[in-house]
Amino acid sequence: MRRTLARTALRLSRWKVAGELAPKGILVGAPHTSNWDWVATILMSWSQSVQPMILVKKEFFKAPFGPLLRATGGIPLDRNNPGETVRELLERAEGSEHFLLALAAEGTRSKGDYWKSGFYRISQQTGIPILFGYIDGPSKTVGVGPTFVPTGDITADMDVVRAFYSDKRGINPEMGTEPRLREEGASE
Image (cartoon, rainbow, N blue to C red; front, side):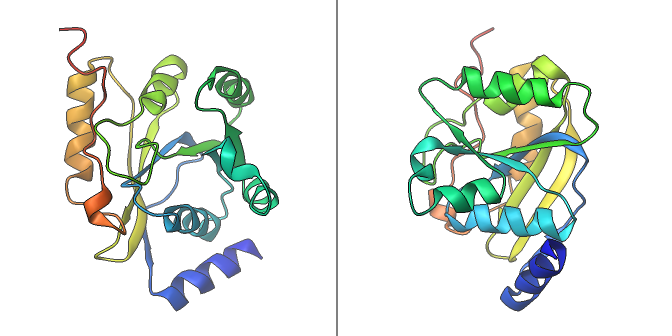
């Protein structure tokens, strides 16, 4: 039923889906410039019969949105203390063939200076690949690109990320944040 609903909604809104979700990965959603990004990610996932877990800041789980977020795979994240939530998720991922964790690496819909590095650190610690999820407003496309396993060379790895996202504009392009981590250059 979700698959049919998602495909119908995407068709009626004239959004296209590109790429196939892998059964296991850390799905980075970028550029994150609108609340509609969440809707588009859910529709893309459901259109492929996948239910991702989506990290969402805990403040959004108050009424009236809490039940809707939980029903669609939302997991509340305390951004001041994310460790416990992340540990629980990683325990769930261990030994599981199907584990799709979606998060917005930008951490906000507003223009910022850096991406949050959680997606990178989780992938590096677990070996779970990063999936390049994207929303491109101008082409009305929501999709997923290749999988990527970090090498540990943060700058080189982020060059790969930047190359992929270089032509993705988001729904509100002026609000996008360049893919770069605060940690880049720290090891040099």
